[in-house]
Image (cartoon, rainbow, N blue to C red; front, side, top):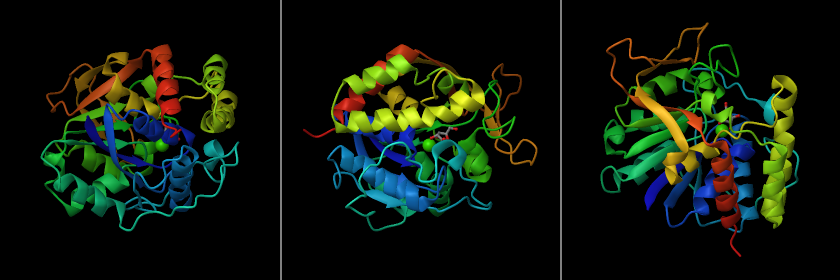
Length: 314
Ligand code: BDR
Ligand code: CA
């Protein structure tokens, strides 16, 4: 069983990612959920994390720690135009009863990793990397204590979804991303090239809903609402289900294909947040990330549906 911490800014795809971990107790032990300002402000990302836990009857089983409200040196740019005002539009989940646990997420990440045996904790990053970079700044030995980092973010040849060059999670806090990519821990990066082939097409969402139960119904509607933006703005046949690729990779790496390469992060204005991927090894820079560019999309959705369903306590 792999021990993981999930750092997130829920929107529905983030919530599916961490609920899948809860639906996989034989494979994953979720030590904590840490939230950050991202898609929507921290108030909502934290609330949404709590709401998602409550709809599957798992509140209190995993602590939710709130972290940074915004990037290290920049102003937060949210994405309500994609996810709606609260980040969870399309279905009215009840207000959470629980509140976030005491403690600042970056401190808790340090505490959890440093108190466990070396190289036994994996950080799963589904959002701007602010909390992770702050944790690394607080504890310089943190990176060397990690088993690894698996993150959704960046783009190889697909181009960006916020600017021509950059994907949202890396764009929002490029200084944090730079620190993380230079930290020395083994990194798995899942870019848009991969997630843009994993779309919530109608038959897949219908299959999810047909499993039955209140949480499958809720996520059907949340994902249904969410995909409208990508369908309209991008002409896609469904919305990309980005963040659950992180959990899916931990559960079934054989669904993915990629290459170990060098990745550098641009903090320049024109290319802010660009992941410069040396796919053809034309430099001798260190290979710091396994970049996954392909996924078996049907196998992925089957796994998502199975483990999301299993997240609910009977
Ligand atoms: C990333 O941004 C968010 O909208 C998604 O949850 C994902 O983490 C994709 O660019
Ligand atoms: Ca996210």
